[in-house]
Amino acid sequence: DTAVSQTPKYLVTQMGNDKSIKCEQNLGHDTMYWYKQDSKKFLKIMFSYNNKELIINETVPNRFSPKSPDKAHLNLHINSLELGDSAVYFCASSLSLGASGANVLTFGAGSRLTVL
Amino acid sequence: AQSVSQHNHHVILSEAASLELGCNYSYGGTVNLFWYVQYPGQHLQLLLKYFSGDPLVKGIKGFEAEFIKSKFSFNLRKPSVQWSDTAEYFCAVNGHSGGYNKLIFGAGTRLAVHP
Image (cartoon, rainbow over all chains, first blue to last red; front, side):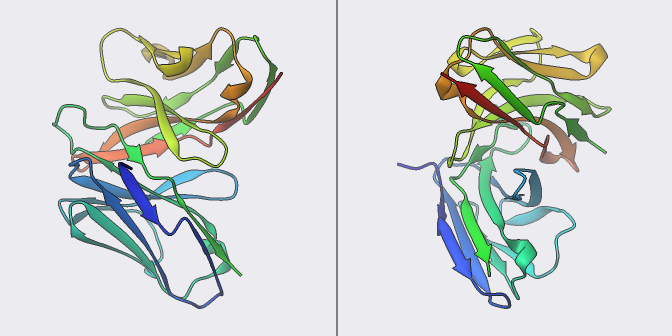
């Protein structure tokens, strides 16, 4: 009964390939996020969607393209993978501001991407 | 721009020792403050949060944190740590970006507790 689930958990691929990570939440939240955690454990927001609309887009290369088919799903597609893309990618969800309990993010278990 | 600074990158303690992890933030508006914990190989879990009211907040597993507005600080404390507290601890501030949540994390503090 996982609240925020990501697939795959591990992904090993070659440079130049294209890969996708999927995320789904069953919490009824309307906002979803992608965070990147590098090898030094530093967490940085990449994107955020609210009701399928992109609301936060940090300075991320355009090789990264998020897609939200509905408010319960947020996928991340990465084109032309580079060595520096190796990281753990965390999906998270929350209610939007103004709602009771907003601002508290629930994280998925992470997807460890290794680019060789 | 919002930022979060965690002063201790690595902390090593013996069981039953007291813990205090420093966190300072930079943000001019109303803030919501959080501590998240990441156990080895696991996802981030919320330890505690401060939105308003009593600046001393209590979280799970005996952790507490004190919001000191004048010092822009939100330090995490636990009077007696256990081996199972070994984890990475992240302080975070929620600054609002265009009316939406934007959780900014500190660099994290790795805590190792020895039995």
